[in-house]
Amino acid sequence: MKNAVYGLYLVGIIAASPAFGDYPDSGNIFSIDNAVPDRSKFLFYSNDYLEPARSALAVVSQFFLSNSKGQRVAVVALRNLTASTHNVSADEVVGVFADGEKRLPGRVELKLVGSEALSYAFDFGTSAFPLLYVYTRN
Image (cartoon, rainbow, N blue to C red; front, side):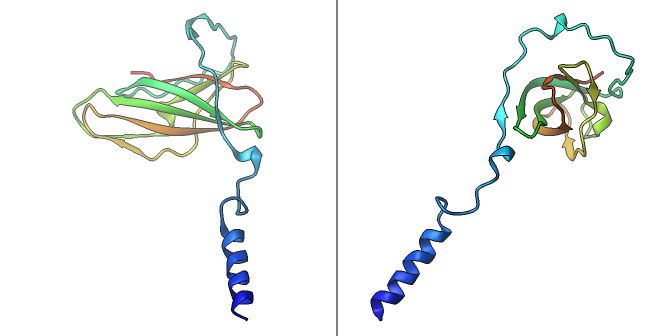
């Protein structure tokens, strides 16, 4: 009887272990996309005049993540160029895709105190085309 209880206990531990547990669907796993070396060479025609709202934000660095479902995320380090606290809003950041489309990110919850720089993962939704770069306007 003792061995039976021990055996059931062992099966419970194995079933709960990461090797047999709930892993995310492989389509939900993000990978880092290759960086674009020189974005100044992109000259897309676009009748989309979407521009970021003027702000005191500067992009310090950026890299992009995607998954097989086409979800696009930009991890961007932003710097607050003022001495006051700034609540970042989605309309202050624009992402440019490889087909020339410009898009605002989804919901943003980021607060930067004066002169602070922080990284934030901006969700740009789903696209068949990768993100090329993200920019602000100050």
